[in-house]
Length: 144
Length: 174
Image 1: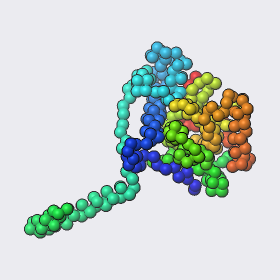
Image 2 (image 1 turned 45 degrees about the horizontal axis):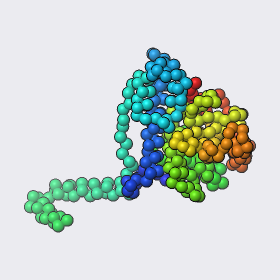
Image 3 (image 1 turned 180 degrees about the horizontal axis):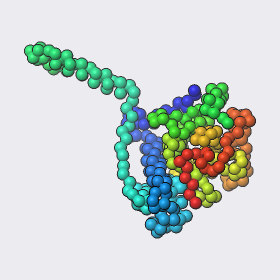
Image 4 (image 1 turned 90 degrees about the horizontal axis):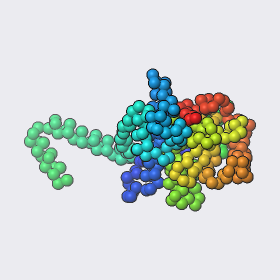
């Protein structure tokens, strides 16, 4: 299968200082799009719920026209925390946030896991040594 | 109906089509992009300035949203705002992905090969297209049809009832 070979944007993002502006813009867009997905998903759930929420009801709750609600929900380009919070309130909830750490580069990941493996092996070896030997082991690593 | 295997074969044979695979979670929708679009999304298009690089980074986020299977809005009225729209005449089965903010507004023309399987071929800044039915607009649609035929011959995009035969998690606002 042919792939697009899209380079990953987020791995190594912190290697450049300052972070390139296109990566910041990309992250900002992702945040808005995720928020948009959340609001649309909750709206769909509320439509099928006992209250059978619809656009007119959202409009009444926010004191806006139905057409304006369509505009607001249509695209998240101008969304702010304030406007998204208003939409969430009219749908019947509030927004919470999650934290997604950047991916760790494969080679760095492998190096970390190798280091952990070596450290664990060192501990295991030390636990099998008599106490006097442990001291000599400790001395042997002091210069590091 | 075009299948993923067909699209992969076109990718291999022509080098002008690519599977858009941003990595991470398994894709819930499938997207193929043209070489022209791939170059824009990866900052490799000739003569891109920083503003264009940033702008197409946002477009990349939109396309990833599509592949992730997120809820997306589809245009059901001429004046409504949405992330996806089918262009007139509907029988041509040409869609646009509409990425309107920040300016400049972008359009990516494409078609559905199957439900949730989109082929995005022709990227534009909206201003390049002119008004609907202008010379520029008509020319862009004609070029799109030519590009489609060059890649896929007589195979047609799917047609169906709007929007659920095309896209899952589609929301149209009236």
